[in-house]
Length: 380
Picture 1 (cartoon, rainbow, N blue to C red):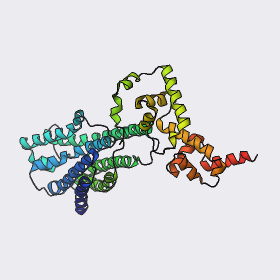
Picture 2 (picture 1 turned 180 degrees about the horizontal axis):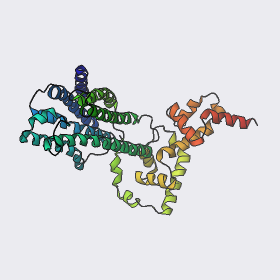
Picture 3 (picture 1 turned 120 degrees about the vertical axis):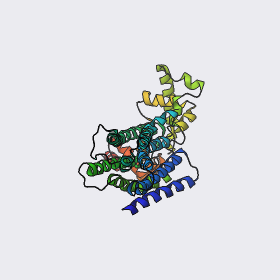
Picture 4 (picture 1 turned 180 degrees about the vertical axis):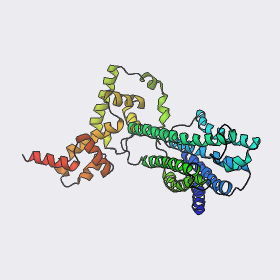
């Protein structure tokens, strides 16, 4: 089984180097590669320092402390992918790691080297004794820390999905499902850690430090998955940084932050007339930034009018026009020899799957069902 751990560590190092060698690296790439290096160190430490008791006692405890870095690394990676800027205040996520290191140093200087090396949490002894209580508290800290990050990451993903719908009209190339699966994987690792910890310390059917090894077997599988998608992934918001919209950049944008009813009507008329005349929705990859430029209108203003005036996000706003355009074109005689997908492409849709889903969401019918219904009505 140690071979599996070695493969996981080597794979993590290889993926870190692979990511660092790719062209056009961005912040998410540096975060992911750094995380892989930490994982590799943690796995090697698990095998040599923790299982084989190689090295000084404080090295054992330091390797344990690295557990507290994995969740923050993943959290920062998700934030960086969505261009959600990492501020100095986010360093607070390193506090659990620092607390653990301080505790390890405390053990070392107080002479609890045997307990530090074994780190067996439920050995004989009283919990009023710091050398037995402190390791237990650190382990319980991990138990509560992981689900907090899993929930936090899911909340961020939900927020990012909403932002994507506010910025883009086509989202086929923006896929967050793999990050969601990785987050599920983090939850699975947490469950394995708890089960194996209980197995060793409560039910006593796992060997010493088996809880750590079992956890790393699952981590090894996650490394392959995360490395594959992480290498291919680029930033989600490549054109519009998420937080930049919070601060108006021009005087015009400041003046239009609060719109009166008459301003809503003015901007609404301008937008609707432009949409009917110019049909910008036929561009399959149009974004809210591009449409705002065509309208000579601040992005924030356009977003407010669509959201508050029409009660829609940008994605639904554009695709409603595409659906209506398809409904017009599909009954035209000149398109009789075209497939439904060909007509859909001409109306701004990128793929068959997205077209079918969007059309059904707006009409309650599939494109084929809609066409049959139209043809039936024409013959009656």
